[in-house]
Image (cartoon, rainbow, N blue to C red; front, side, top):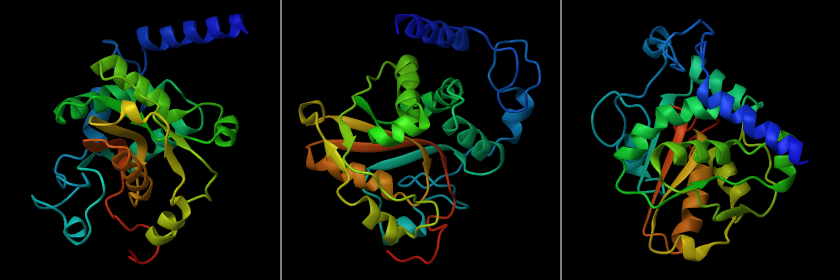
Length: 243
Protein backbone atom coordinates (compact mmCIF):
# COMPACT_ATOMS: atom_id res chain seq x y z
CA UNK A 1 0.00 0.00 0.00
CA UNK A 2 2.81 2.43 0.88
CA UNK A 3 4.40 1.76 -2.49
CA UNK A 4 1.21 2.72 -4.34
CA UNK A 5 0.83 5.89 -2.26
CA UNK A 6 4.45 6.80 -3.04
CA UNK A 7 3.87 6.07 -6.74
CA UNK A 8 0.74 8.24 -6.78
CA UNK A 9 2.61 11.10 -5.11
CA UNK A 10 5.49 10.83 -7.60
CA UNK A 11 3.05 10.81 -10.52
CA UNK A 12 1.25 13.87 -9.16
CA UNK A 13 4.57 15.68 -8.78
CA UNK A 14 5.38 14.88 -12.41
CA UNK A 15 2.00 16.28 -13.50
CA UNK A 16 2.80 19.56 -11.77
CA UNK A 17 6.36 19.96 -12.94
CA UNK A 18 6.24 18.79 -16.57
CA UNK A 19 4.05 19.86 -19.43
CA UNK A 20 5.22 19.35 -22.97
CA UNK A 21 1.95 19.35 -24.92
CA UNK A 22 -1.23 21.43 -24.89
CA UNK A 23 -3.92 19.74 -22.78
CA UNK A 24 -6.54 20.71 -25.36
CA UNK A 25 -5.05 19.99 -28.79
CA UNK A 26 -1.98 17.92 -27.93
CA UNK A 27 0.45 20.14 -29.85
CA UNK A 28 3.93 20.63 -28.43
CA UNK A 29 4.42 23.62 -26.13
CA UNK A 30 7.70 25.15 -25.09
CA UNK A 31 6.96 27.37 -22.10
CA UNK A 32 5.34 24.84 -19.80
CA UNK A 33 1.88 26.26 -20.47
CA UNK A 34 -0.98 23.81 -20.15
CA UNK A 35 -3.10 25.41 -22.89
CA UNK A 36 -1.47 26.76 -26.04
CA UNK A 37 -2.17 30.26 -27.33
CA UNK A 38 -4.24 29.00 -30.27
CA UNK A 39 -6.54 26.99 -27.99
CA UNK A 40 -6.82 29.91 -25.58
CA UNK A 41 -8.36 31.87 -28.45
CA UNK A 42 -10.79 29.07 -29.38
CA UNK A 43 -12.00 27.96 -25.97
CA UNK A 44 -15.47 29.30 -25.02
CA UNK A 45 -14.45 31.53 -22.12
CA UNK A 46 -17.38 33.29 -20.47
CA UNK A 47 -16.46 36.97 -20.81
CA UNK A 48 -19.86 38.61 -20.28
CA UNK A 49 -21.92 36.99 -17.54
CA UNK A 50 -24.88 37.43 -15.24
CA UNK A 51 -23.52 38.71 -11.89
CA UNK A 52 -25.82 36.31 -10.05
CA UNK A 53 -25.69 32.92 -11.82
CA UNK A 54 -22.56 33.55 -13.86
CA UNK A 55 -24.07 32.24 -17.09
CA UNK A 56 -23.10 33.85 -20.36
CA UNK A 57 -25.36 36.75 -21.30
CA UNK A 58 -25.70 38.94 -24.38
CA UNK A 59 -26.32 42.14 -22.44
CA UNK A 60 -24.90 43.48 -19.18
CA UNK A 61 -26.92 42.95 -16.00
CA UNK A 62 -28.89 40.27 -14.21
CA UNK A 63 -30.32 37.67 -16.60
CA UNK A 64 -34.06 37.16 -17.04
CA UNK A 65 -33.98 33.74 -15.35
CA UNK A 66 -32.39 35.15 -12.17
CA UNK A 67 -34.89 38.00 -12.09
CA UNK A 68 -37.63 35.37 -11.94
CA UNK A 69 -35.83 33.02 -9.57
CA UNK A 70 -32.43 33.66 -8.00
CA UNK A 71 -30.11 30.75 -7.22
CA UNK A 72 -29.43 30.03 -3.54
CA UNK A 73 -25.72 31.05 -3.56
CA UNK A 74 -24.85 34.72 -3.34
CA UNK A 75 -23.08 34.39 -6.69
CA UNK A 76 -22.00 31.67 -9.10
CA UNK A 77 -19.15 31.88 -11.61
CA UNK A 78 -17.91 29.51 -14.31
CA UNK A 79 -14.87 29.72 -16.54
CA UNK A 80 -16.16 28.20 -19.79
CA UNK A 81 -19.40 27.65 -21.62
CA UNK A 82 -20.20 23.92 -21.60
CA UNK A 83 -19.61 23.27 -25.26
CA UNK A 84 -16.90 22.13 -27.66
CA UNK A 85 -13.46 21.44 -26.24
CA UNK A 86 -14.39 22.74 -22.79
CA UNK A 87 -17.22 20.21 -22.44
CA UNK A 88 -14.98 17.47 -23.85
CA UNK A 89 -12.26 18.21 -21.30
CA UNK A 90 -14.75 18.03 -18.42
CA UNK A 91 -15.98 14.65 -19.65
CA UNK A 92 -12.39 13.45 -20.03
CA UNK A 93 -11.62 14.62 -16.50
CA UNK A 94 -14.58 12.76 -15.05
CA UNK A 95 -13.54 9.61 -16.90
CA UNK A 96 -10.26 9.55 -15.01
CA UNK A 97 -7.77 12.03 -16.52
CA UNK A 98 -6.93 13.49 -13.11
CA UNK A 99 -4.16 15.79 -14.34
CA UNK A 100 -6.81 18.03 -15.89
CA UNK A 101 -7.56 19.28 -12.37
CA UNK A 102 -4.31 21.22 -12.60
CA UNK A 103 -5.35 22.83 -15.88
CA UNK A 104 -8.83 23.71 -14.62
CA UNK A 105 -7.48 25.09 -11.33
CA UNK A 106 -5.11 27.43 -13.18
CA UNK A 107 -8.07 28.78 -15.15
CA UNK A 108 -10.35 29.09 -12.11
CA UNK A 109 -7.87 30.62 -9.67
CA UNK A 110 -8.18 34.20 -11.01
CA UNK A 111 -11.98 33.95 -10.77
CA UNK A 112 -11.78 32.67 -7.19
CA UNK A 113 -9.49 35.56 -6.25
CA UNK A 114 -12.11 37.97 -7.63
CA UNK A 115 -14.72 36.73 -5.12
CA UNK A 116 -15.02 38.50 -1.76
CA UNK A 117 -12.55 36.91 0.68
CA UNK A 118 -13.31 33.18 0.85
CA UNK A 119 -12.62 31.17 4.01
CA UNK A 120 -13.06 27.66 2.63
CA UNK A 121 -13.59 25.60 -0.51
CA UNK A 122 -16.39 23.02 -0.25
CA UNK A 123 -16.28 20.33 -2.96
CA UNK A 124 -19.61 18.80 -3.95
CA UNK A 125 -19.41 15.38 -2.25
CA UNK A 126 -19.91 11.89 -3.70
CA UNK A 127 -21.32 8.80 -2.05
CA UNK A 128 -18.90 5.97 -1.26
CA UNK A 129 -20.55 3.88 -3.95
CA UNK A 130 -20.10 6.57 -6.62
CA UNK A 131 -16.50 7.11 -5.54
CA UNK A 132 -15.76 3.40 -5.87
CA UNK A 133 -17.32 3.32 -9.32
CA UNK A 134 -15.43 6.38 -10.63
CA UNK A 135 -12.18 5.63 -8.85
CA UNK A 136 -11.52 9.19 -7.68
CA UNK A 137 -13.36 12.27 -6.46
CA UNK A 138 -13.00 14.82 -9.24
CA UNK A 139 -14.43 17.81 -7.36
CA UNK A 140 -12.23 17.16 -4.33
CA UNK A 141 -9.18 16.91 -6.56
CA UNK A 142 -10.12 20.17 -8.30
CA UNK A 143 -10.65 21.88 -4.94
CA UNK A 144 -7.24 20.72 -3.70
CA UNK A 145 -5.53 22.11 -6.80
CA UNK A 146 -7.33 25.44 -6.33
CA UNK A 147 -6.26 25.47 -2.69
CA UNK A 148 -2.65 24.87 -3.72
CA UNK A 149 -2.77 27.91 -6.01
CA UNK A 150 -4.77 30.30 -3.83
CA UNK A 151 -4.15 29.25 -0.25
CA UNK A 152 -7.88 28.92 0.50
CA UNK A 153 -8.27 25.70 2.50
CA UNK A 154 -10.42 22.77 1.41
CA UNK A 155 -13.01 21.75 3.98
CA UNK A 156 -14.89 18.51 3.35
CA UNK A 157 -17.78 19.77 5.39
CA UNK A 158 -20.52 18.07 3.38
CA UNK A 159 -21.43 14.44 2.82
CA UNK A 160 -23.88 12.97 0.35
CA UNK A 161 -26.18 10.76 2.39
CA UNK A 162 -27.77 8.73 -0.37
CA UNK A 163 -27.47 7.81 -4.01
CA UNK A 164 -29.48 9.90 -6.44
CA UNK A 165 -30.76 9.00 -9.88
CA UNK A 166 -28.74 10.09 -12.91
CA UNK A 167 -29.70 13.68 -13.67
CA UNK A 168 -28.65 14.08 -17.28
CA UNK A 169 -32.16 14.18 -18.76
CA UNK A 170 -34.16 15.36 -15.73
CA UNK A 171 -36.01 18.67 -15.69
CA UNK A 172 -35.24 21.29 -13.07
CA UNK A 173 -38.18 20.19 -10.91
CA UNK A 174 -37.20 16.53 -11.21
CA UNK A 175 -33.60 17.34 -10.26
CA UNK A 176 -34.71 19.26 -7.20
CA UNK A 177 -36.91 16.37 -6.08
CA UNK A 178 -34.10 13.91 -6.79
CA UNK A 179 -31.59 15.87 -4.68
CA UNK A 180 -33.85 16.98 -1.82
CA UNK A 181 -32.19 16.30 1.53
CA UNK A 182 -29.25 14.38 0.08
CA UNK A 183 -26.52 16.62 1.57
CA UNK A 184 -25.58 16.77 5.24
CA UNK A 185 -23.10 19.23 6.79
CA UNK A 186 -21.00 17.21 9.21
CA UNK A 187 -18.48 19.94 10.09
CA UNK A 188 -20.81 22.72 11.10
CA UNK A 189 -18.18 24.57 13.15
CA UNK A 190 -16.02 24.82 10.03
CA UNK A 191 -18.88 26.50 8.17
CA UNK A 192 -20.62 28.68 10.74
CA UNK A 193 -20.00 32.38 10.18
CA UNK A 194 -17.67 31.80 7.24
CA UNK A 195 -17.71 32.63 3.54
CA UNK A 196 -17.54 29.36 1.61
CA UNK A 197 -17.19 28.49 -2.07
CA UNK A 198 -18.82 25.37 -3.49
CA UNK A 199 -16.62 23.67 -6.10
CA UNK A 200 -18.13 21.58 -8.91
CA UNK A 201 -17.28 20.66 -12.50
CA UNK A 202 -20.41 21.81 -14.37
CA UNK A 203 -23.32 24.14 -13.62
CA UNK A 204 -26.37 22.88 -15.48
CA UNK A 205 -29.77 23.70 -13.97
CA UNK A 206 -28.13 24.69 -10.68
CA UNK A 207 -30.14 22.18 -8.65
CA UNK A 208 -27.08 20.48 -7.11
CA UNK A 209 -25.43 23.75 -6.13
CA UNK A 210 -28.71 25.12 -4.74
CA UNK A 211 -29.30 22.04 -2.58
CA UNK A 212 -25.79 22.11 -1.14
CA UNK A 213 -25.89 25.89 -0.67
CA UNK A 214 -29.17 25.54 1.24
CA UNK A 215 -27.58 22.99 3.56
CA UNK A 216 -24.58 25.26 4.12
CA UNK A 217 -26.83 28.21 4.93
CA UNK A 218 -28.75 26.11 7.45
CA UNK A 219 -25.40 25.24 9.02
CA UNK A 220 -24.74 28.93 9.52
CA UNK A 221 -22.51 29.94 6.60
CA UNK A 222 -22.28 33.72 6.39
CA UNK A 223 -21.94 33.72 2.59
CA UNK A 224 -22.09 30.97 -0.02
CA UNK A 225 -20.62 31.21 -3.51
CA UNK A 226 -20.11 28.58 -6.20
CA UNK A 227 -17.39 28.07 -8.78
CA UNK A 228 -17.49 25.59 -11.65
CA UNK A 229 -15.36 24.81 -14.68
CA UNK A 230 -18.23 25.07 -17.17
CA UNK A 231 -21.85 26.15 -17.24
CA UNK A 232 -24.62 25.78 -19.78
CA UNK A 233 -26.02 28.95 -21.31
CA UNK A 234 -29.63 27.82 -21.08
CA UNK A 235 -30.71 27.43 -17.46
CA UNK A 236 -33.29 24.84 -18.52
CA UNK A 237 -31.51 22.60 -21.07
CA UNK A 238 -33.66 19.56 -20.29
CA UNK A 239 -37.41 19.69 -20.71
CA UNK A 240 -39.77 22.53 -19.93
CA UNK A 241 -39.09 25.39 -17.53
CA UNK A 242 -40.97 23.84 -14.66
CA UNK A 243 -39.73 25.44 -11.50
